[in-house]
Length: 345
Ligand SMILES: [Ca+2]
Image 1 (tube, helix red, strand yellow):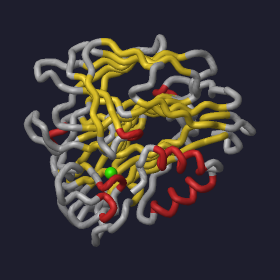
Image 2 (cartoon, helix red, strand yellow):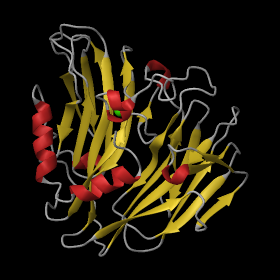
Image 3 (cartoon, protein in one colour):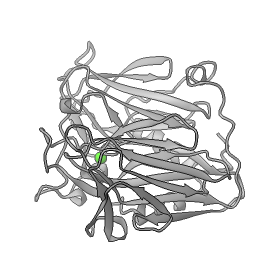
């Protein structure tokens, strides 16, 4: 990591579609669209969490950069979980004698190589040292990325869903809500309906809502391999008009981009349910100077040879907080982005 560069911490909520749940039905979540849901009264990021008591339930997150922090809850009902990071695997425990009342770092490391990493967290249930049950709870995660070299300035540019620079194909409609960035969003349930954007920037976020009638979609950036995500929400049960999170969820994220013109295309994969995809806004970090990191090695080799993740035991929240402050010189960028997308409580 280059501590003098412009680094930001990207907060990813448990509802964000860039987190992949192997089997969403194994997880319980609050319903952000229910009448009694109050994010402000909740200690959890965005008021949501994913909780499971299924042994073997897992989620994965692919990221680029040297640091990752996983936040959740510890308490008497919680057991152990495995952390698979690239080719390393370790077992940690979320058991504690009393329930935590605020997010705590269940796992963190800031000493990875600046490269692509693959993380999978799997619930193992009660293990030898645990005094409780089989539960596991995930609230949010943070990932540190470099958006510009030292000395550069960065401006965040927001492209709303009705911006003329977007190219839509297929049939799309529009929604209005005070929850959406700019007050509106576009949606489709057409199979193969797509939206494309040409842009310059080092980092790009795509925001949309999450709902039980949403489903798979693909994203292709430039000539990269197509990625597939799932926009379905976690608390709806059978496919239906329930369990909606209108506060902007991250539907796609990419960083470490060079100064050339990039093209992002997102395509709805409607399938037999004719599932929906919604686009709320796109935020692009535009630096005054580009210096993308030369990603070191493959994901599998990045975690060996001096890049062993450091795990956090009890009291780990303090460790993570210290680390965040040390290498986050431009917290303002993160804060302004959050404010703009209403991701603060
Ligand atoms: Ca959350």
